[in-house]
Length: 133
Image (cartoon, rainbow, N blue to C red; front, side, top):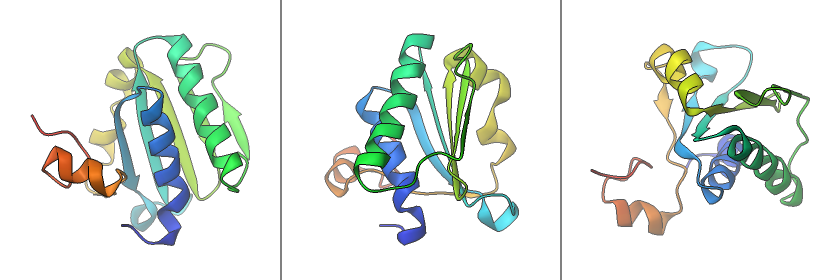
């Protein structure tokens, strides 16, 4: 389990996963970026699902006693919704926008945080927080 600083980004990743978001990752960008500590990146097949994922992230963090977003962007066209919590930023993309911007490639030198529940990590076998092939 990651340290307490990653509590809310991990909660956001788990919330996105419950709404069937694709390829959910948590990147620890703090060591190379002064603006925030973590990026949570997820995508969805269509704009309706992008909205559902973003709403679930916000609701789950709120009900768990976490912070409210300082600002939210992208709700007009729902191709890239950004929830800025200050210490972490949640990016929810429609699939083609995620491929276009490819944030994981831009931040490929930062650590990925394991966000899955321990039972899910054991089930995927890799312990990386991503399903094995």
